[in-house]
Length: 443
Figure 1 (cartoon, rainbow, N blue to C red):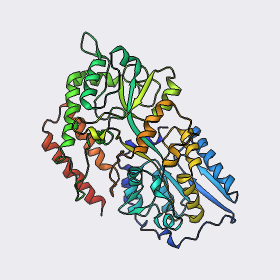
Figure 2: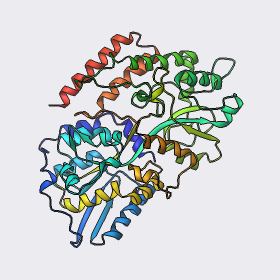
Figure 3: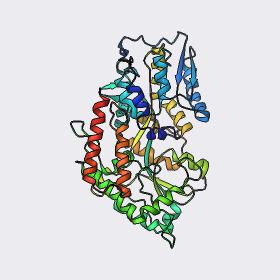
Figure 4: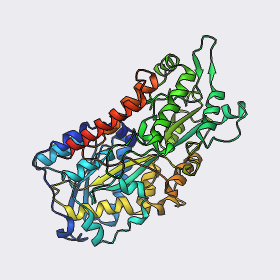
């Protein structure tokens, strides 16, 4: 479940490694690749980062493909990283299919030729990309080159404790940030010494899923202007978002929040504070429903889209999305069969439903969203609805991966905590760092 979310923590290590891969060059396009021969016996090697139970779930989906095409033997290899894929390409031993948890690295995958261009094969086989939401399509291409297909998605929304809501007299989930702030304060319980016993919400940047890229869609904040330059200083929505986080932090007291979060359970552990009743509301991905079912099955909770800025009520229903991506590495020996497998994994409704049920993620095609075979918790419907409505946002793809997110996150952390006080100057500095980094990454 959490494999996609882990990619959010990647801040360009893999991306930098990929950018520095000399000799990768650009791969010849798929237009000259032979079509898949269903009678030719072939072995396709598939690498992914899945392990243990998740690797077995993946195997069950691959088995469905093998049932359709018994001539194709699939070697399912788990525990593989983006760096290992790159090293294999360098060594002339690339897998036929590679699945990455780091959609933020799509710029390096496509731009450096690590993944082959799938566009010609998509056109040749008349693959209907209209079944894939716009935001998901965005993180599988870079500068017009589609070198990957999506394979399950994360969608982020609001989780809230129903018992706490009832006790506080709150009858419905908030839709605007002002409503949300009022509810957060009402739900908060403090000890006599000012320490936090129960937090209505933790506004600390970087805590659990409270990352800048995940919150930004709720304000309509955009990373780049029409010239593809960073615009955090000139897009007032960024300032509004950060000032809200700082204001709510001041309500709690930064020191009190620091103590509270330092004692909180780890994000994917059973003592996660939403699951133990110390946090009333949080921002998280759909995968949390599976953790709760496993680690806190008696928790009475519900989900909804995360509230949006009062100035932008039309955005309600939006949220952040990212996901797994799958492609054909440079040097793959069985491109035709590899593409046929990728096409099955990313477009076959039954395959996507089986995969989504097994891993607790959102299937990445609109026809799978409405399948009666989806067997997911009632709270999961929020994320299916959000995904299907087409309002979701994702990160822009850049040549140096997601390094720009870390620059913004570091400043947000400093500003909200009070160690940086000049918001305008600080955001201007963030813009310069991001633009300078993008220029380096483009070389």
